[in-house]
Image (cartoon, rainbow, N blue to C red; front, side, top):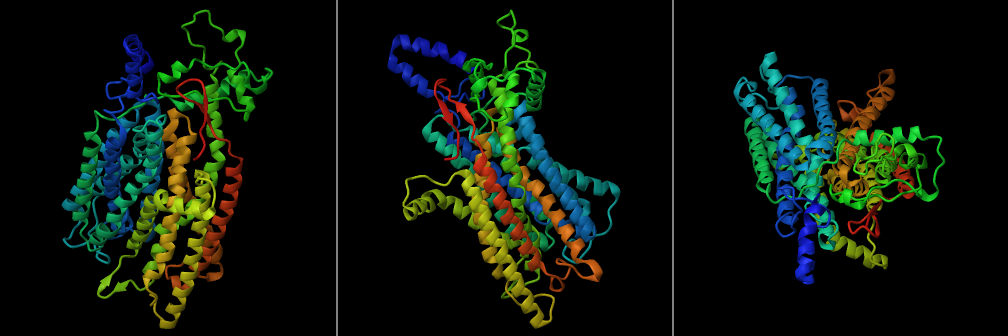
Length: 602
């Protein structure tokens, strides 16, 4: 579509002056992106860091709003809703599960029908409604009697209607924050032309800054807001969250006329099903050698949708039958497209192959989430059993995650400017930085070390607790600092590289779904970690024993669970290395139509 609109301008200009034609050609983006009006995007007027910064501000403020609710959800359920430990834990788990599931739904709608911008606007409006509802409900009727909601001070029971308003509000928040997140990350990257060398570098950097924005939003919530909420100031905390979410939404809307867009590519499930059905219909046909003679359409049809042709690969050859053209597939009308349930293009077949190749790598990253999940749960429990006092001030154990956030942010900012040049100098090698998959592997190795250190700290914590004879150890909570810092560095390696890898190795029309896949590995890892802990407790509580992770950590062996987790993470690292070494990268044709580009990690 955009190519047809652009050709008359170029053709007319070439009759006047070749230099004008050259300037006009460079004035437009080359990746097929469109402006707000559906016309080819002009570089100087659209996208770039002006739009990228607005989206980063949106991500930071929206995540601050979410983290302000998430960080103390268990305490709120226990103190305000009068739930038991198990009930509060289940409330939190179900809520977080819906958040992760909504990210997959949002990615699907973004790539298939709504587009990335409309997905972000639509669902972020839901989060505002949810936060306003939660703030109003908390101020009006949840905190009764006045002053309740602090640790150890329960509120009065609530009616079913009041409890229902609470649940509706928090699930609207989960929907409004989870659904647009993969679309927002992809939409931000869309603001940079990947066929322009300068903008391509900015496109890669955007994912790093996106993760920094996410962490900085958490930093305020997990230090300032968590302390206020622990003191019972729930109303203030929730209204701050609602205000930040409104500011985030305003930041998103302010760039509406300048954003670059790509058209939704349709239902991917339908396209994938067409390849499977078409290949099964032709199961008895002989396979062509090296993909010769397979059906493909002209490059202009892909440019009209801002996508690129994917070059043929030799793996999963049985799917190539879907692109074999037979006499039954030939239509007499040249303008009539072939039946896609009988004949698919090479690009459509390769889309399915791309997803199949990604699955082993994706599965091997699920177990890697153990370390990061334990930081949100067992690290906090460990810190609560340590000396949290500094002079007359008590440090909330959850606030120790600030060390993780600061180390993650600092490492990402210093990576390209200091760490990579130093690495190349020490290694005495040509300028070749670690690839995305290599960075994930390095991050998993660091995470293993972090969990081992957590186990050693736990051994010392129990030693000091046994000497004092008290439930709380005299060992300072700041002994947890190394494990938090190392996990922060590990996150900087793993999550940013994982996001970049999935975004680069998924077809153009499925970018949001690729980001959602990278995020969903953490979600599934949450359930796997919970299952592992459940199995461990069943096995270690036999014969009346307290188990490895009892309510009073001094009676158990949390250190053994940490060492088990480190062993599983190391085993997962080995599986990941095998999958990474066997992975074949996607091959795309560039928009010039001639040469092929091997899209692999830089």
